[in-house]
Length: 332
Image (cartoon, rainbow, N blue to C red; front, side, top):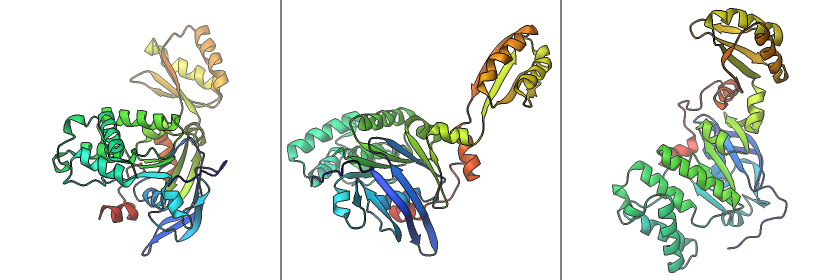
């Protein structure tokens, strides 16, 4: 089915999505707008509602309340149209262990309407791209966890859909394969696809996402670019170390005077740290230190990290030990 995209419509537009599992409210009024041709990151601790939200947007779960559209098509009333435009990669491999890697991909390709020849060509391309060519004829029950994950990712890319849901796609991957997956995501977006990425790897969101939503307790509690989120939790920080450690107390006093902010001195390292509310004052700091004969060995200005953003906004680290009810259901 070749469903036309509604011109000008966002890739995803969701308002007030709600989903219950028994007495648990997994999603509690999620609002999202995902621009076409972008990577939209969704961050949140385990149990925050990320997977449940993705499954509703992909028509795998019916919302209890609210509305969501994909390229202008309602996920509830136009679910067939929506499914023709999306690809989904979950946290758990959705492949047949009794088949080989090649056979799995050919089956998926055939189910998507490709001919035998097209299916074999595409399968060969994907196996090579994900470093599985040498293991292509082995049954999946002999695969490691990372190899299974790569095959699951490959299967989701058979049709190169306009919208791809990647639910924690690099969990369990080694650094090299993870980096390859990042490159694949960038290539997909460069080719016109839109990606909604849920992840607990904050550096992954920082590297890939054009915008990021932070979800906690089933609600979006923050939304913006990585820089906007970082700026929302505090100023940048100036760190400098005098070449002569004995001059560190004097340097700290100068930094405090120029910036009008308290400076912290680490006696062991001789490193001075101070809030940098006004970056334009940095040249004044350097001039004042030079006038007092204090040479600088090292200096940098750091923005808050996404780790700090996450901890500040949610009050917990990204790997807090709860689990999304939808993820548990999917694993069963």
